[in-house]
Image (cartoon, rainbow, N blue to C red; front, side):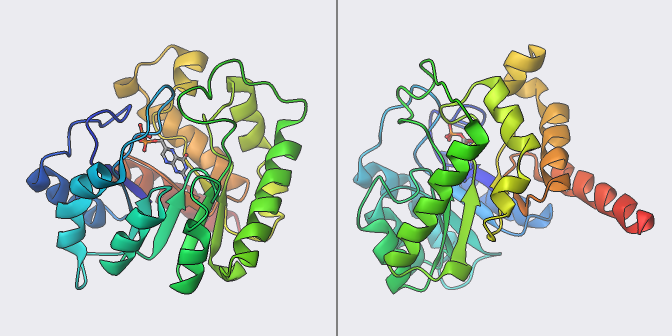
Length: 261
Ligand code: HH2
């Protein structure tokens, strides 16, 4: 899953794709570099970020949605928590709604996905982006995230979403310390045991500042390493900014695994 943020303030690519031509060019590049789907977002959820009004989110998305309407280069996912935004994106052909609130942010979102026979990614987040990194604490992070995702999966199905159309995500960096992020990657099999594909987003995240002292532009190698560690434990989808490098890393890892068999 390649990431395209049409925002002024995303933590790693903020401002780069606000210009409509730059956004559409990047969308095509993400397809050409080998991603299976592009996750388009118009609201940053980085720690400390404030919510964006629905009109502004739609205004930012407009050029990308216009580029994919009527059959774009490849499938897109809409990274939003708002049903009104998801509805417009699905009208333009988005096949997946990636909701970092797992349906808790807008009560209309899960019923909308159900009505449209769409797919949804339900992500774990402790608190909300503005405050989530203020001293998060867990007794058993893997157990708590698993319990949350299990409950949200049931809520999605109760709202009319087909169970086969639900993906789950531990929400790396969303209200979590370094040790929590590492424990979730290490314990990913407890989440894949829920029977749904697991999405993992480690790309360029601040856990690599804490672990290695690396700034955003220096986080490619650790992002690839953590991503492969997640795939080795059953992750089905990697959410990544560096698409070509991630696809190459995955292809190499897969070739070695095939040789081992
Ligand atoms: N991470 C970010 C945003 N959305 N969605 C899922 N399912 N999983 C993630 O780990 C995830 C996500 C944060 O990354 P990014 O979109 O690059 O930054 P920002 O929120 O600042 O736009």
